Image (cartoon, rainbow, N blue to C red; front, side, top):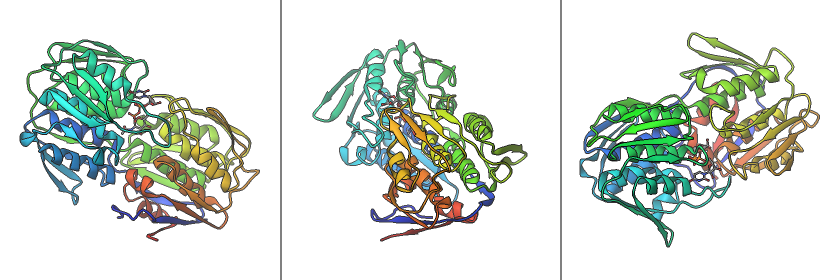
Length: 428
Ligand code: UD1
């Protein structure tokens, strides 16, 4: 498995024919990251299982160590143990934050545990400006002083105090940060218009195992009754719903037949619905989801990204790749991020001829078959989309900037290759 790859590494992807076989989904990156950050809330020992081996997880472990935690990584068992008894540093420098925006997840836990937190302000990225105003708003309402000076977010408080926090948008990260901070606040915190993503539910279930009192995670109203102290525990991270969706689309786009194991169908309902609208067959089997693209002619559909349980923004790019191969014109509307169509231009370099107007993209479909080309992964999911497109494009596709992809998909090349994909990673 590739884990630390060179900046110049590329994927070379060839037209592969239908993918067949079985793939096992890893633990969810976006659940593991806040859960690891939440270990800061206790001086006890936490064992986190089903952690995917990814660069982002490595960065979070480095952050925890820099704060004073003892972190043991057991990659044979995908398990990480964090002993938080030594945590006494409240600052995360830019060197680490620049590697991963999710560094901001330690803000709420540090504030609750040590009464202060200084984290370099995360910058924007290819998919939008990505402000942290909602994180700051929530922590301020809980009584913290939060100031943004010279690129640092500095927060301090004597003791956080439970209150009502209404989020103007159901931000996943803000909901998580506020929920973690509120576990040790005095009194009850209610988060309204909270994000409802499965990763929030997984984080709440971990926190509750640590002794927190959280109700309503998975709905738009979360209530957290603060407690004095949290203790160590053991937890297994949920399967990754975006990796699941990506392999579902891989089966459909190649007109293959793939059994996806270790997934939770309930977490990918919008992807299932849209694949069925396109004409793919999705069957719930005893040990997984079977996706078949080899039965019907696939046809156009429309997708609109929304917070959970709507169609996930993280599946927009991979699904757009599929829509370039179906009969008829599809419409894709992005409502969660302001600039998440960079892959449309790259797919168009492969011949897809996608027209983007603001937050709407028109995908003409299979009138313009894809042709291999050198393309660039502008972000994690864009990179996955280009790989999927490369599997069905005529000739060879070279995907550069693939460190984005390797940040979020454990063993992507190995898993695709086992299904018959012609993909290899070259370091130069
Ligand atoms: C998380 C996921 C990411 C996914 C996204 C939306 C992790 C590590 N990442 O990111 O893969 O694409 O949810 O499902 O879990 N916003 C503000 N102010 C804030 C916070 C967010 O305006 O303080 C805006 C963002 O700019 C964006 C929207 O809210 O337009 C959604 O962002 P958010 O839900 O916070 O995404 P993340 O938690 O960053």
